[in-house]
Length: 132
Image (cartoon, rainbow, N blue to C red; front, side, top):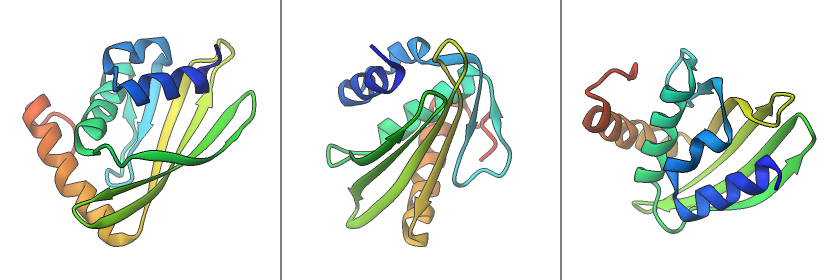
C-alpha cells in the first residue's frame, strides 16, 4: 500500500495512533495559522491529531494530485456553518514517508475559525507547548 492510500485509511478511521506508519521522524508540519514550521514527528502528530479532533464527519477529500515525491489533497468540511476548503500538501522521502506536511486553508473566516478551535484543542492536549 502506498503512503497516500495509507493516509486515507488512517484519516478515514481517525486512527491517529497509526501516524507513525506514514510520518518520517524528521517530519515538518506547516500550519495555516502558525508562522514557524513545527519540526519533528511528535509535533506533527500533535497538530494532525488536534485537526481530526476539530473536524467533524463532513470532512472529506474531493481532489488529489499525486506523484512519487508529492501529494496535494484538497478537502472540504462544514464546521459551525462555515465551509472550510483547503489542501494538504505532502512531500515524501525515499522510503515513502511524509517529511513535510503543509496545510493551506480558505476562506479567511475558515482560517480564523480553525485558529480558534485548533488553539483550544492543542492547549487542552499539549499544555500550550505548540506555538499558538
